[in-house]
Length: 332
Image 1: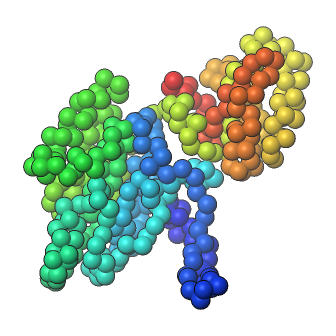
Image 2 (image 1 turned 45 degrees about the vertical axis):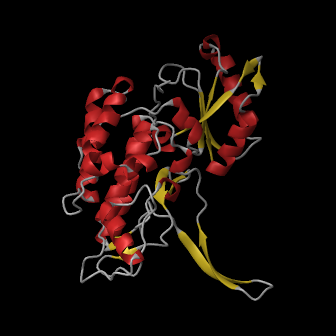
């Protein structure tokens, strides 16, 4: 089972008092969706989301399935697994055996799906194996990544005649407009990756597996501080608390460790606590909770509190990086 797909825990039937019977799916609880994050992202976040969703699509497509409704609201962050996951398989179908006439959401709909939907609306039956393929998912992901990079909703743009005539030129323009705020080489790699997903001919589009080979994924990025605020994890990072002078007195340093652990345990089960004495991370407090529910509660209650007259700034921190002992010099 692919961990980048939402987990189904069970199915049950609900009988209402009016006699209506509803089939219900019990799914894992996830956090923010990409639709809540569309505001112009760091390259770290775009890369993270792109890799996770491509790996999820590669798994689906190898099994012969098409998601058929990829959009920002259907990509959610899992705090405990520290990845983005795909949800909502209501329009999914087995490739070559499409039983859903109308697929994909307006704004993320591939040209061949647009044609198929229009023909279905007109009552024209599709012939033979002319149904949509897994390439429709790649088109949708290309639009999503372009929106994440630019911070612009593109629904009206992709409806325009200019887009239909030459979407590659519009992609180039969007990247050129944002070139001053992002490093050049990674931007070019991301641009080329997105353009390979947005080719009008579905047979020429890259597959999920070939997209994962893009040089864009070989470049290491550091998260922005905004990423740490928006994406929950079991680890909290507390800023604006510790003076440099406190770090060089061993007795005072041990007292601070004990005090911070005692305070943080009020909000949940603390697994570990770290206060680095040197950069990176010097003077920051890293608190690992047993789960993301505890860390989210701690972040909510600690943010804005004062200790020794200082306002606490509480962000999340990637558990995987913390476990490796890797402390980012976070981009401001």
